[in-house]
Image (tube, rainbow, N blue to C red; front, side):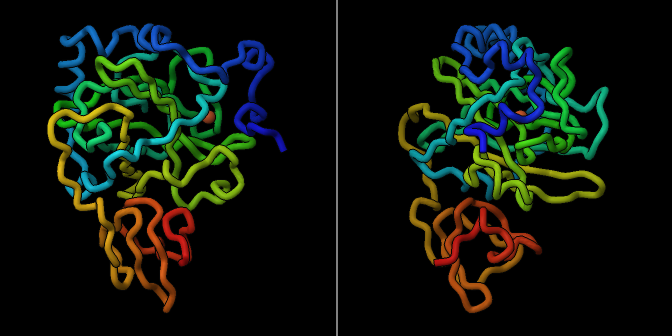
Length: 284
Ligand SMILES: [Fe+2]
């Protein structure tokens, strides 16, 4: 098996020649989006206004941050392109199952970060990336409450990978860029994709004919003042597993006479019983 199935997928000879696996420098990334989150408050303000109009994630999503536990980085793969357009809706010009992804971006102290740049790119419903144009590519900013909202479609599969969305994040005034990927629960290929990591699983639910997903990022950015209180610091026993209950990482529950430990903060839904979602629950 290849060391990196992402590279061995449907990458073209041209992709290989350009060696896209290497990360971008900060300068390149800022150039990539045209406007730095660091220097153009007017543009940021416009983006924040758009994001602010969106409904915020459920309040319990705030609990998905554990102080000091940052979101892991992953390879950007071969298909990142600089200069993506600023927009929070990637669906024009494409088809597929509508997907709305919302969440927060926090610092290490679990304080929400405003004006964080998020640059998304993904495959279309057929598993193809638009390497000639900017279909299903775009960047946006978190609002004053650290909330982002992306409207897109569920990405298709391509050889060697499970279903995923790529993203780069950069907080204003911070040199680091976090490059990572988001994943979908219940995907058979999650078990065979060597890049996949359960800590990057979104919470996904079906709403009508579309999907709604949440994911909170935690950047390696120092907090300011006193850390926000977080009731998830000390996970406690969760009793018997129940639909609709929010479970923080580390919480233990019982189900079917067995005990399981929560690996990823989420709100339980029917079909997500511990034995069915090993990415979320580990038997202890
Ligand atoms: Fe990819």
